Image 1 (cartoon, rainbow over the protein chains, first blue to last red):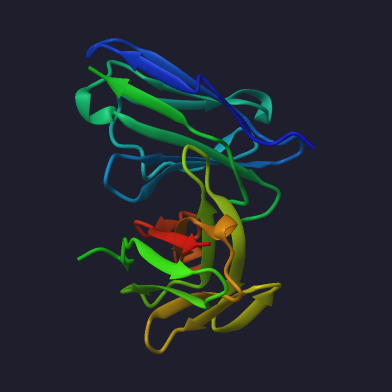
Image 2 (image 1 turned 90 degrees about the vertical axis):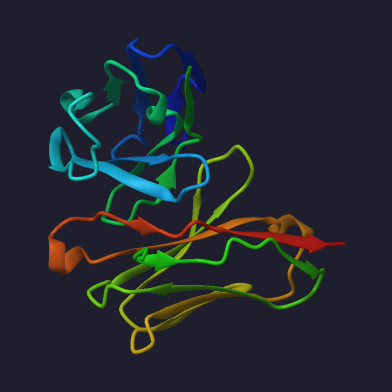
Length: 112
Length: 114
């Protein structure tokens, strides 16, 4: 069974640019989570999808972040425009049940 | 004050030692407790999760939850160099909040010396 995949693995962009991160969950997993780790801090929840619906987006920092999950399959997280404080590692996780079981390797975003 | 506190380490132990990793928390509504292992440049890997109080054992790993003290532990028996990683605790008040938002500790770096 293929794991959770994320693309790109690393992205370097300038402040003000737009970046789109992609997550492909394990096939059949209805639950998809986005988390972020800013350097030196703990991993923080961003949002939770159940199929294509946003179950909880209370962790999204502001309206520069937009997450979508088309058809309940892959998900994208767009940051527009990017700010310096958006730098960090963005993780996606998926599961059949409520526990975030399988994490992807993360996308390391650097905003300069 | 953070909702979940975890000593960042690093914690260095000799091979074969019993390792104790701990987290404290402040939210008494937390019901789900997870432990993840994360190797460098990889995503977290779920090791164990428990619901409410009690112990859970899986091979060399034992998770304990003491809700009265708001304290959780992960014990690793017969530690191996391959156990060297960062260990993250995470917890959720799913029933209280109606969502599955997990609050993570900062992680403890463990080094098992051969």
